[in-house]
Image (cartoon, helix red, strand yellow):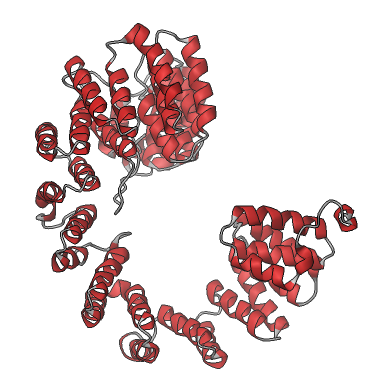
Length: 599
């Protein structure tokens, strides 16, 4: 199970980044004799179903028909139908090969429920098989069920197969898993299978994750007592030493591990990491060159190595490493971002702006343009920042509204509100008169400036174009609740929005608040509680507390307030609520009101 790529200004913690990169090496099959960890990438359909042998014996007419339909569905690319067909016949004939074909087809269909059912059947019919357990572990981890995922991997480890427990626990810890519970699982497994050291090594890594380094040392000493020459022991020792800033010790452990397993690329990585920490970038570069020679086509490895260089302020080496990626006709967004960060650190502002401006459309697009504009503003080049965003709007019309919003924010931050309003008016009347996103943006700006009539004019136009726009209905209705006494009119809009999107937390909150404004406090608490269950944020919680208080349920209101005061920091909405209702503050046990219960 590989961690998704993370490219950040401040980088990852050294050990987290190391294990992310180690997972890249594992997935690429770069470790001699090791089975790679389960991958979250969807394999190509040309390979997957072809791997599973055809089932041609013991079939009656119904079974043969069902399998032919599944096979034809797979060939047409209807992998969901293929998976269902294979699964039904796998259950009927108790065939692990059919269950396997079902799992492979379900994976191609990206159908998690079908994949889970197929893998469970495959695992039951073929208890010794590792692949279905890997699939089940991958599925459990994807849904944050880390203990279930570990159970599957430990079953693989129990059969003397490599389960990549060390990589798994690092991913789980980074995702916020329950570390003590995972440690207990690993401890029990190690006691049951004393001949398998990887559970103890993984346990030590988790103990180090909680900074219980003494416990981690004791655990690794247990491993060393029987498995002193086990390479994973020395890899863990190296990384835990690095976490404790014992860089020389980390280097020596990595060097010893490399002598034990010269084909294990993770030790090259560990040695390079230690050299960087020791201020020896030239020595680190030699190790990185060896890695890149072994894996010349891995862009992901090159990006991760560059991130490691940046973490240790080796900008020149990072730039050299990124150069081949940046020079491509269609460079990866992550390469452009890292190269731009490198240029920023070198105070090469024009170079950084140019690189940020090349980031292609996608989830990094807007952030890169915002950073480029921000850099120009920071260097007193305000008009250049506006020009950059204006040109981006012309080049990427599909992102016009988002880029315009950045431009408006820039003008507002400089106090040029009238210029921002004129820019938006011009965009609506000339370049995009039918752009609902821009009209909605102007309505919101009008409200913020205190012009309710201008806001209503644009909202009315939007609803004339699309009477079933739930977002507009909710925003308009909620505004009427907050700025006018037209509560019944607001309620009708919000109820219409609710019919369109019955599970939308924002709409549920507005619906509850409408009933609150109409003094129907019991009804308000019903809808606000539903909104809170769907999205427990401070605004919804403050609404619910106020409704509970006025519905004469002080105990529930105070209990919820106490919990939210601990949960949110800062909590401006709760502070304002307490100013309006000082009695909400929980009374001391000695006061009579402390014993009062909800009616």
